[in-house]
Image (cartoon, rainbow, N blue to C red; front, side, top):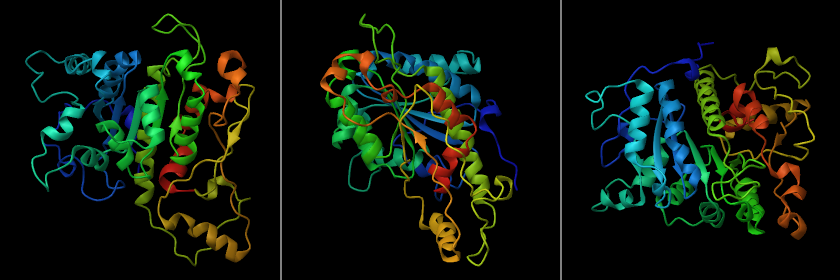
Length: 367
């Protein structure tokens, strides 16, 4: 097996460059599908109108230090009230310890806004920004995801650069939503319905919000965005798993005549055995079957061959997700009585992100 590059240990090896305009994805990633790699993991970070957007420069600074992760930011109009391109540039400069002379105009991470969607488009055939970004990215993180953007996503609106990208995104690209809003907005009766849509219908992952804490407005209760350190760790986990998938994709695929081991075979003998689900806990008691996104018909070949041979199927891994069922009126008015499983626990995301076993099967291997 070829060696697997762990991007979390790579360290910065080059200066991040803002892409030229108009943005054309083919100029900034290898040709071919997303299994073709240059050892760079590409992330679109979407920030929306929540005060938690002030953490975007912190997230960028930590990711830039890694070196093998490229970031592009989409900021909604409301989000730009909390940070600017200059703030992000300072984060890049701090991360790489660059002098003012080294910080050239094209060094850094670009922020795209709704105005950029049409400013570079002049005629039919010109690149369209949200389409080029969806071709470019390997992962989309929406952090923070405000109540407004959550509602747009759940209703399928695409009247902004951010919502248009998400609507046009390939279902094989993972999306993580990190809600952040006022406690009463989070406890609104529509919020669990919107979360149910993004999880059950779209297959997105939801991390957070934190179950309690003092909000920027002074209220106490749920609504704070997942800690930005945990968001960085989550992205690092996806980056490492992407490198694992690319390495596995280079292996020779067994022919259909190959005998596949049974589900009782030792995991060390085959990579198609699925990992055991995380243990249930008092905090996360509800488990839902994972949403298996289309990853190519070849992912079903081992299962089909096992059925033909009379061999039992491999168990489907159970993934802890927030409870998508609507909250009762009483629960919606009282955060303490909300089902514990409504909140995505950071410990669960760490389990899923750190070892990579669960996610690279779900998102990239399709089993």
